[in-house]
Structure formats: structure tokens, C-alpha cells
Image 1 (spheres, rainbow, N blue to C red):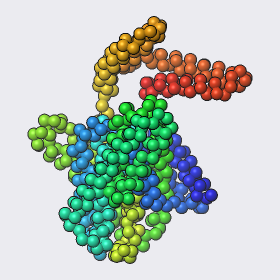
Image 2: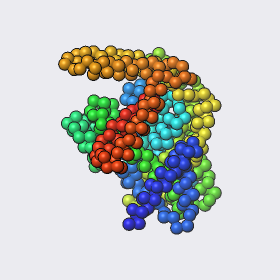
Image 3: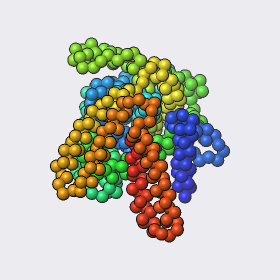
Image 4: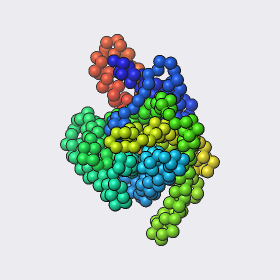
Length: 524
């Protein structure tokens, strides 16, 4: 019973922390991390410990799956070169640079153990990077690069950790064995992800009940990761591929009701998991620090060296990766040369989080399975320090840096112009469909549908007009919401007076709620 109470308490604190973050204008992971660290010093507050298996199988898959579902596959494909340079190249280079720096400071520790620590701290976090990037309002291509990097770098880092741990235990390591293992795990993950997504898509096409659709969607990432782990493939790659495949085809697989319900369910799961994970990071930091036997001076020295290495290496890698590739004629003709402010912002958006937390706790215990002695507690503490410092330092200053460098999101005028053009085509297609199927329908119904199409098309063009005055669509939304509130009150009074049963109120409430949510979505 105590464990259930603890879970409820953690969820409640994460909800309060997220609400406080929104009130203060901060990103929720930052507030929850600080809150967890502060709560760990309260007498009698329960200690927290996240098992790595729980993070890798129970928490990371749904977070990655949701991020993949919401990622634009065409935009992902167009940004594939910078994504792979960051998700594969930078992770590998950072792992060896951090490993070398730690080995120079602590030469008595095996080099393979130092590289394992480097792989643990190398991948930036999908949750914090995406949340902060969207809140800051970065250009769409920058957000796509950060999202794509955080989706794929986890696989590179986790494979690198396993290889380093194998080398630490005495396994033979060379370039070709490493390349073969990476290819095998990534290839297996690709195959499993595509097959699982294809089968899930078949199920979604056959299912007509929205609740069953939601259940299949909830099960998909967990089934994919369990199968991938059983066959020793990359579960991260498998989950990401399944999410990208299904997210791209979701408009053709699901009914409107299923999509609306599924979006709401996944938003809630994502919100709760993010909050609890970052709260747990803060709660564990104190106990991990107290378990270290390494001298304080050495601990500070190693922690500072690792933090500086992961931050600086991202800058050292980002500028050549951005500009040297554009010396090639194909790349130069296809892509515009971005200003230096863009790679600078991407370099600073290197916050660590969930994967570093899980990977740190998978480091082997000295003395087990032939693993030589090394300061495991120190390495875990350093990994947590990297999470805290990057979140607090880079996470809080990234909005300021983006404003100073004038890196802003794509203009709403361009989006509105593109939307208006496509909406015009869509309205023509809708009218053609109406004329084709209108035989026998009452004239009043046909006229009403024509007016609806005209109104939707006009709304899109109104967004290009004067934003200082209330547009007709904005006035319609404001007045219609007032009318809906009045209707809702009448139904509630009728229910309270016993003139209608609860079922009638529920049905009317659902219709009014759907219309109001549509109005709010259009305004957003």
C-alpha cells in the first residue's frame, strides 16, 4: 500500500509542479527537477529509485513513440543529413572525447569504463529539447532537427554503452565487430519497427470501435520494445520507426473520434511520465551524491570536465557539420546556407535527461561477470550532474539566446498564405463532392453546406488580413461560445429540476463540448 501512496504522491507533486511552471513561465522539467532535489532534503520523505529496466521498457518507449507520432516524416526526411550527423556522429565522438578526458584525470580506471560514461552522457533528451524548442518558438527546421536527433541518438548511445561494457568485461572489441553489432541491432530494429507498424495499421483499418483503436495504440510501443529486446535488437529504433510509420498514415487509418480520443490520451500519458521522471531525477541526486567514496575534489574535477566536454563538443561538431557539407555542389544547390545563429542555438540545445538517467544505472557492478573495479557510484553521480547542469544552465538560457540571436519561428503569414491556398483547393473539392452526391437532398441542407464551405475558406484568408481588428470568424467564435454557455446552463437546470434524465444531458453536453473544442482549436 505504501508504494501506491508513493506513486500517487509523486504524480500529484508533478502535476502541481507543472502547473507552477506554467504560472511562472518556466519549462516543467526544470521546475520538477529543482522540486525533487529540494524534497529529497525533507525529513521522512520517501527515497526514490528508478530501475533501469522500468525506464528503458516502461517509460522511454511511450515518450519516444509519442514524439515519433507527432514528427513530420517529410520534414524528417529533408533534414536526415543533419539529424544523422548529430544522432550518430556527435554521440560517438562525444563518447570518446568524454572517455579520454576522464581517463586522463583518472588513469587507473579502464579506458572502456570511461568511454561507457561518455556514451551515457552523450545523447541529448527528447523531452526537454522538444519542449523548450517549441516554447521558445524556434524555426520549424531547427525543431525538426532537434526532434529527429533526440529520436535516434538514444539507440546510438545505448549500443555504445553495451559495447563499452562488453569491452570492460574482457570481450574482444574492434572496428568491424563494433560496426557489425551496430548494423545488426539497428537493422533488426528497423525490420521489427516496420513489421509491427504494418500489423498495427492492419488492425486499425479493421477496428471500428474507437476504444479498441486507443487500446491498440497504447499497446503498440510496449509490444514493439518487448519483441526487440527479446531478439537483442535496438528497441529504440524499432519504437521510433513504428511511430513514424503510423503517425504518417494516421489520417487514413483512424476515424475522427479515434484520433481525437487518442491525442488526448497520449497527451495525458506524456504529461504524467515527463513530470514523474524529472521529479525522480531530482529526488535521487542527494542519495547518489552521499554514496560516493571518491574524494570531493576529484568528484568536482571529473564532473566539471565531463560537463564542459559535452557542452563544448556540441559546438565543435556543429559548425563544421553545418557548413563543410555545403561545400558539396549537391548540398549547396539544395539547401540555403543558414546564418551562424542557427548552429549556435542548436549547439546550446543539448539538455540531457531520461536516456542518460536510464543508461547510467545500467552500468555494471564491479566484480560481477568479470568486470574490474571502477568507481560506478562516481560515474552515476557525474551523469546526474550533467542532467542537472544542462537542464538548469542551457534550459533556462536557451530562450534568452534565441532572442539575442534573433532566431525566431517561421512567420505566421507564410503559414497562413499556404493554408489559404490549400484550403481553397479543398473547398473546391468539397463543393464538387457536394454537387455529385446532392441528388434528393433538401435544398436548405445543400445551401447550408455551401455556406459552411465558403465560411471555412474565408476564415483561412482572414488570417492574412489586419490582425488588429476582430475578423468575422473571430467574432463568430466569440459569440458562438457565449451561446453555447447559455445552452449548457439551460440543460443543466432542466436536469436539476428533473425535466430531462442524465443521459439526455450527457448527449447534449457532448455535442456542445465538441463544437466548443472545435472553435477553440480553430482560434489556436
